Length: 164
Image (tube, rainbow, N blue to C red; front, side, top):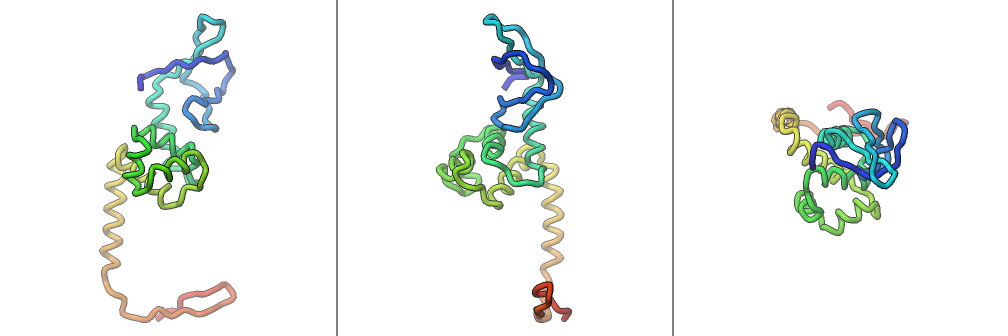
């Protein structure tokens, strides 16, 4: 992608509903302009489109909600991956990736999480390295074998573990 991209539009007022990224709910408050086109319409010029798409992607991967198919596809494209390449990364089939992106089937939680991890691993390895250190520390703490029994009791609030 280039630093700016031009799209054919009629002039609009702020905030701009930015559909060109393929998502339904992205709006721009600034960072764009309209320039007259030869046919009486105006072309939209988005400044630093790479930075905008990076900001959208980072918002998507850190949001606490499941990704939609369109968001999943946006992240894949932003990473520069084809559907077959992403299928290999996630251990899925190309047909499955297509069904998720076209919203023919729901994206399972592990695939949602793994795509976010792939995105962060490729764009923010510092964050992934920090998270990996925390996970390894917790796993080391869990290496000690359990010495007691797991005992549960049924209560009005449901099953609860009892102190050993």
